[in-house]
Amino acid sequence: MLKKLRGYARKVHSLLVVMYISVEIRKSQGKTQNDISIATGILRPNICRMESGNYNPTLDMMVRMAHS
Image: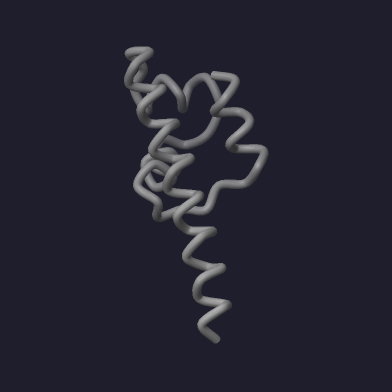
């Protein structure tokens, strides 16, 4: 049980690190969540949830965000 929890904690931590980095990159480029939404076709509320760690993005969504 403890092993499963550690694995889950690592996965969650990794996701939060990726999302933190994506927020920092977006802000350093002077882009808003709305700018990313328009460029990717991802709804702004979904971007907000992804950035706050309350949404598990698909690989496709992450790739679209990376290319915006």
